[in-house]
Image 1: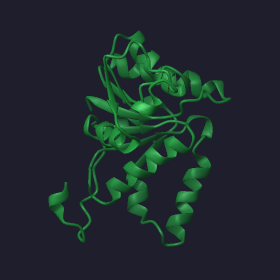
Image 2: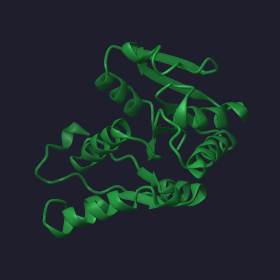
Image 3: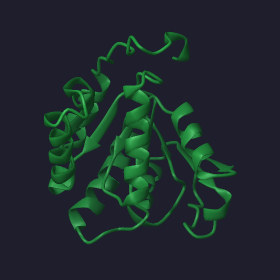
Image 4: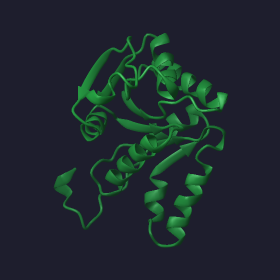
Amino acid sequence: MKSIAVFCGSSTGTDSKIKSEAYQLGKTLGEQHITLVYGAAKIGIMGEVARGVIDQEGDVLGIIPGFLETKEIVHPKLSELIVTDNMHERKVIMYEKSDGFMVLPGGFGTMDEFFEITTWGQLGLHIKPIGILNINGFFDNLLAQCKTMVERGFLKQENLEAVVVDDTIDGLLEQMNNYKPLPAPKWLNKDRL
């Protein structure tokens, strides 16, 4: 992977381990010459990931809708900034510019991005790896809910397994680099890929 979109919070949260791991992820991406594609903010967990990449003189592409440009405080040291008209356009460009997606702790916005990109994968609209960095068990309850969806017949096991999970940066990157995509669903037109 040459570029990874990272979905994460614009708040720092209350767990210092999450903040430090976000910075370490950015540092690792910078060291491995993987471009960070993210929401452009210099604050919160988003800002920590960007700072890690920038400290390694790596490439950082920030994408932000115009109405958030001042509220989320755009990072001044981005390699490139793209300002979009709306949130949907932001997600489409993040998808287009990324070879994979990584989810770190965050709130509703992060969950929105995770579920949308995961749904696109389930529908066969992309075959890129999606990884969850499960820092300090942050996603344990979400993963348990996903297992409940499988048990109750609302989600196929193979679609859940298409999302790779690890509690270490190196482990997650290794899984994402070795990811084997699911075949496109037979009921969908394969020309959509």
